[in-house]
Length: 234
Image (cartoon, rainbow, N blue to C red; front, side):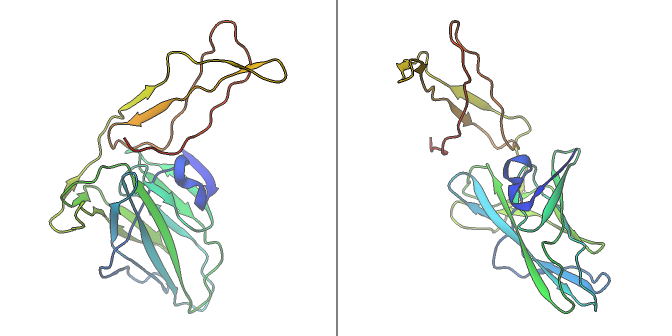
């Protein structure tokens, strides 16, 4: 499946990707005079799971503007959030990871350097030890591909001696709602009520969003709608 969207709209329709950290950058081989480097991808504990960013620094060593774009394969399915660039196409690989191809929002002039920041999020729960993705992601620019892994910082801040990490294969979600609600008469004579529904995710299986349906009780009619609430800690 292939989808087109703006780079900043990947959050639910695609997956996530994240690289950060103060370690040495990884240089990619020269391709047609265009080079790029990646910083190490380190995900740190956040409000809900992990978050981080991958910084890709592109240098155009040619005498012509470069505007061929960038292709990113995430190391873990449904973790990339924002490529921070132009219009993107999203391709789902057989293992459910996203391959995100984005054009540059503007060409890189000859001799110039530009940084593209790719952000990621993971629902993995923080652990007291470091972890590293069992699969590698990649960045491809100007015909050259460089692989990288996602390193999960421990709950104490360490990235030393990471163990292999693979997310759960099956999703585990539960839904809670009240048994009954009270309808309130409105000024126009109709009745209205709000039904709070709580969805809880119990593991780190890849997912990018969820759909819902509502069956109205007998005797009621209208046009029910759903609104998203803020995440809550449990």
